[in-house]
Length: 407
Image (cartoon, rainbow, N blue to C red; front, side, top):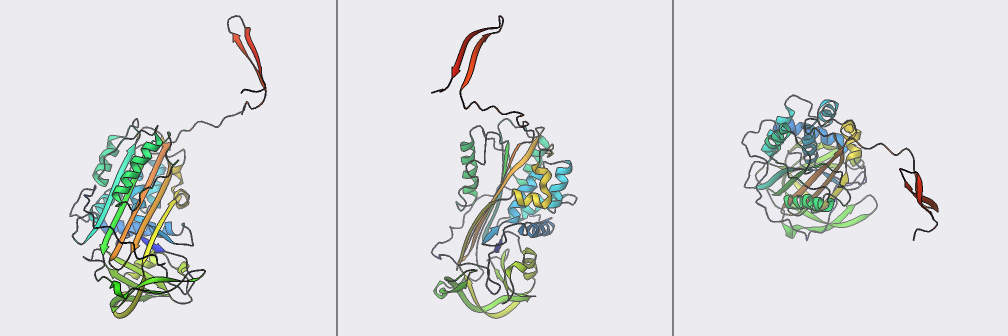
């Protein structure tokens, strides 16, 4: 199973983990977008990076909000942070490698091979992984980093004038919208980019696939769903047929393959009396191996989710602090002293009778690591004052003034 996205929502101990929404929203047509990452038939590194992404997913999941709907793409976040890791050295590099579970020899090249494998063309589904780096016009990027980012992540830099923050923000958000088929039209909020911004790195993941066996829309019917605070009526997709189902300690499991078999949805439903808080991403990977074909009555809510959050606090909690400090070392990227300033992530998912559409984007901003020291004194001229105009050579006051009201 590809670790593209994870689903969770708050629920009572005896309730499912998904919330239904308006089924009238239909997926966008299957897009034909040329991936930016070079395509290769070599899948070397796929399993290693899948394991690393899942381990990172488990760590990050434990840091994210404990209650409420949640969707995020560990693949997107890990890739965006890996692009910064490739430009890091010393303690900063070590911290990023460990936190991203990429602390093994050749991890940069393994990441590139994994992304190439994910981006391989397919007739049955769309899986597009795109990357872009946006340096300031006067930021000198080292040739070593430029070559590495082009080889592994398939990108060339696109310079922006951050002295005009809104224009730069609009350009980046336009790219985000294009790469996600307009499902995420704006990742970078107003104020996130300033004239001090030196570099932004972005990753986008877009997924669109039909079920191997679509649900019959005529069988979709309203049914009760137990939220943490109330019972609500939501549309349920229904099917009675052989399904891939199983059990883990304390939970039922379900796998729904997508057309072509390259991806599958893995679902974990806690048993009555058990809480969704007891399970995490590692349980989903175990669930994928727990199933077998069984004649099953299945009722699954239609779904739409949209989630956005700054990840700085959570990544620092995963020991990435050196990258966000004034002592950050990104000397492989540029001779200019830089530090990470913001990491924003947004994900979207829609699931209906036909299949699933999902999109995720991660944006990383960098600013100068050398900041001016705070002022030692404060002088706010906000009351009546005197001033004079002095002739320097003679020391004579040419003018003297008292100001009680400057208007």
